[in-house]
Amino acid sequence: MLKFLADENFDNTIVRGLFRRNPTVDIVRTQDVGLSGKDDPTVLEWAAQEGCVLLTHDVATITRYAYDRVREGQPMPGVIEISTDAPIGRVIEDVLVLVECSQAGELEGQIQYLPW
Image (cartoon, rainbow, N blue to C red; front, side, top):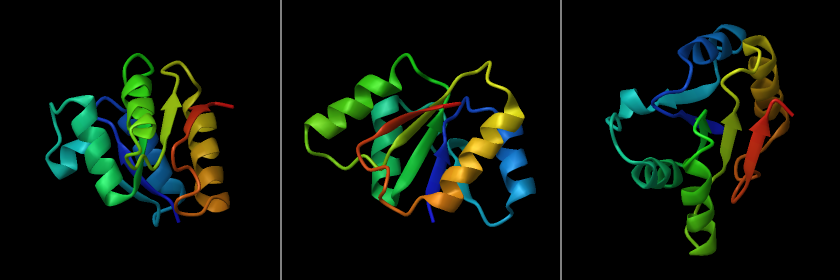
C-alpha cells in the first residue's frame, strides 16, 4: 500500500475525507511529523526517507525540487499535485484509486497531477 505525506498547505478536508472513506489509508501531515515551516527540499527528503508519496497543491515549486532529486539520483517516492480548485469528492476518489491500485514504489520518480 502507498504511504502519503500531506504537505503543510494541503486541504485537510481531503485528508479527513480519505480517512472517512478508508480508515486504513496511510497518510500523515507535515504538521504531525515536525515539518511545519520547513522548505520544500526538506519535506521531499523526509518523504523519501519514509517512503511517502507527497500530496501537495504546490505546483509552483515542488515540481522543480522533485525533478532535481530525480536528476541527482536521489530517491523520490513520488509527488501527486492536486489543483486547488479540483472538486474535493473527485480528488478523494482519485487518491483512493491510487491507494487500491498501486503498489509501494510504483510512483518512484514520478509526478502525477489530479484530477486526471
